[in-house]
Image 1 (cartoon, rainbow, N blue to C red):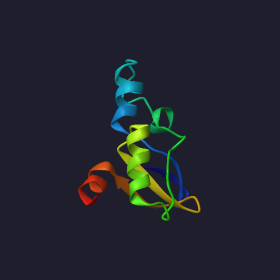
Image 2: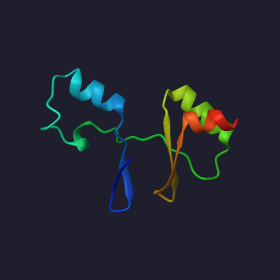
Image 3: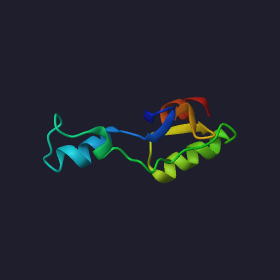
Length: 86
């Protein structure tokens, strides 16, 4: 999660790094997180049901799902955690 002034502004994943640094031949030392993070982050609220979260993660092919309450990051679900509890 990329948080600035208590607000989530993006997410930085292994996929972002691979696609936007390695495959494009950029330098890790010269590339900022802001340049390669995903800023349009898929997220849920604390009221979402676990089954819906798993469905969303599967459909969107994401492994991490931020939980926001009024634009504040309050949690992070991982697909491994959810699958282990259903």
